[in-house]
Length: 406
View 1: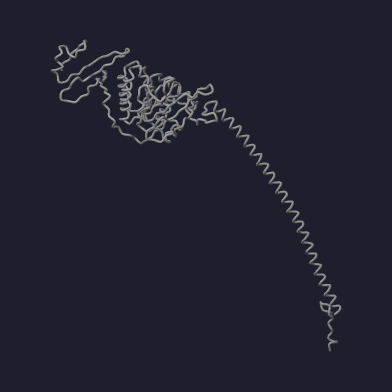
View 2: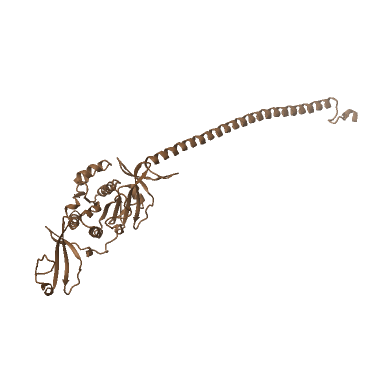
């Protein structure tokens, strides 16, 4: 093993050792933006295939760690198990069951739309299932996150005390990308979580170039997928930039992409959410209004009024108008029903009067009929008596007596 140190760009001191040696490794230590990075390149390795690209490496208490982007292949298993997002309405939008376990989920949106709040709902749901969650935060301290989540009804501190939730907080500029990636690997290996949160991934841009940050995220996503760990990443979009893209260029790697955005209408800024894509499952194509309340996140139907999509106070105002209109129409309907009922009662009263009159007439006519019948019977009886007194038959012919017939 021959080592050589040069500062003029040559590989060796005399320029011959590289031809004599069977394996030549070139180590480089660079400083860019006040962040140092060690890199390794295999110049040659006789008799063996090898990668020729430059790879960053890290020296720490665990030794030397080389993290090539080509070290992972697309051979990880795809789970069919589903896990809740912590928001029932969101689960309903994702086919009614939530995310696939071991998948990659991206929450993208501008500042203040609720990416961290939605992530913490997933954290709470994970811990409630008795599973471990690892949260990497690069913009807020652990105490600040715990305090802020209490304002929306989430108390995550008990999960921390039970050992189900662990926060790793640091400024991204504290170390290079390789250090952050290695730190994540070590934390995952020791803590063994089922859910990993990285909030936000755009913070890594301050520790390297766009290409370097993209390379790091590719390795991280593949690493977590290979261990069936669900990755939930947040991406900060800047105002005025295209919403359906990420600065670290990993959108094509993401399995489920949720886009949160501001909806400006009538002098108000309200939040909206929709699913840009979700591989392998049926999902909603609706835009839902995203509300942060003291009882957690609520998703409401975006109201489609005569003037288009309405949110916030405009939606409430339109709903109030339509409710008032509905009340007036219902009152009109009830008035017509009452009028119809009164007419029915009047008609039934008329029918009752007619029936009573008919019954009276019927009884009177029956009495007349009975009287006439009695009169006829009486008349027949009188004729019969008269005939007997005259000794004549009923037809008026006189019948001789027995004495006379002799």
